Image (tube, rainbow, N blue to C red; front, side, top):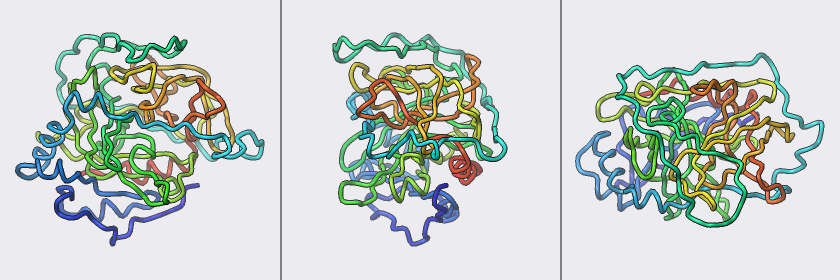
Length: 362
C-alpha cells in the first residue's frame, strides 16, 4: 500500500523566473492524500519566453520550445534495471492477487465536436538499423481514433536534459487527468534528491512531429507517495492535472478518456506507447499484445519489446479495437529478461492513488 502523504503547504515554489503561472486555490489541489504533487514549472529559458498571462501564454511558450526538431531529439526516458533492485519477484508470498471487490471506471467519449478523422499514421522509419526482431507492431490508427487521440507523448526537462515518455488520458470525474509512469514526472537522483520534471507538455495523438490536438501544459504533476519517497517500482505511477486550454475546454472533453480498472485477475493486455530507443524512433504509436503474468511483489509483466520512451503508455484489458480499460502501463524492463515489460499491479494501492486525484479540476 502506498504511503499516505499530503503535500505540505510549505512545499517550496521556484523563484519567479521559473515558477508556473498558477491559479488561485493551488494549495487545495496540492494537498491530496495518497499522492505527492508538485506545481509544474518552467526552465528559465521557457519562463523568459512567456508573453502575457494565463493558459494561452503557457501553450504558446511550450509550443515554441517544443519544436518538431526538439521533440524528435528529446531523450527517451526508460528504465532497464537490475533484477536485484526489485527483489525476488517470484516468491509465492508476494503474488499480485486481487483484494476486495474490483473497481472499474468505463471509457468516456469526448463532448466537444470532433473534426473528421484524419489520415492514418505512416510507418515510422527506424532511426537505427539493428537487425533486431520486433514483435510489436504499428496499428496505423488514423488521427482521431479513440486510442490514438487519448494516447500521446509527454515532453519534459529534467536536470537540464529534454526527455520524452508516453501517457494517456484516463476517464476521471474532473475530466482533466493524464495517466503515466511515476518516473516520467519525478525521480530521486544519485544523491537522493527529489527531481521534478519542468517544461512539461502533453501532446495527444502525436504523429511524426505534429500535434493534432495541440500542446497541453501541465498544471500539477503527481506521483504515488511510495514512488515519490522511495522509488518503489510496484508504485511507479504518475498522473498530471491539466488546466483547461485557451478555449476553456478540459482535455477529456476534447479527446475522451480510456476506462480504468483495479483489483482484477491478471488478464490479456494490449500495450500502447511511443518507443524511441533503438530500433524504434518514437515518431508513431506502437502496440504489443500478450497474456500478462504475475511477477510477484505487486508487479506484473507481459511480452512486450518496446524500448525507452514507451514508459507510461497504458495497457488495456477488455480492448474492443477502439476502447478498453487501463490495467497496467509500461514501467521498466529487467537487464536479465529482454523483450519483457513490467508494470505495477493495479490493486488497492494504485486504486487509492487514482481516487486521490481523479476528481481534481480547474
